[in-house]
Length: 161
Picture 1 (cartoon, rainbow, N blue to C red):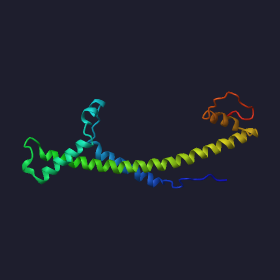
Picture 2 (cartoon, helix red, strand yellow):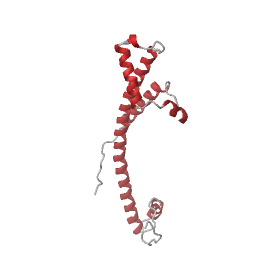
Picture 3 (cartoon, one colour):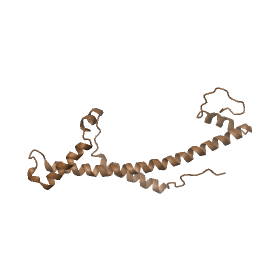
Picture 4 (cartoon, rainbow, N blue to C red):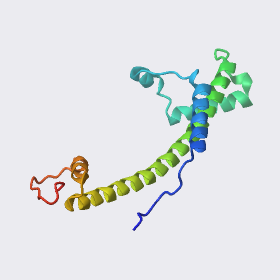
């Protein structure tokens, strides 16, 4: 009886190549601007919480609607560039997180299918080893290591028990 296949959608070689090319292109396009922060730097610079983001947005709104009231001590061109970069990155992160979530869901289904196929193969191998078919005893012994038992009693018919 064939196993239930939860995710029968498989990727062709061309699709894999397309995805890898796109990921490489994305990494190349973005990596020049990447900065690796040390934990202490992340702690120091990572203090812009949601409340502070609201402040940034409100200052930006005032700058756009009433520029004469803006501080002359701020480089407003740089401020706008930083705001534009923030918005671009936030949008990209949101899209990538959605993509990662979908990829993880898809992988979970493939993992499930693979695991249950492996269990079926293990059961078959135990059956064949029990009938003394050559080679299966070694295979079962190798696979049995992935099924540790808390009780130490083993039967002669099933070394995995």
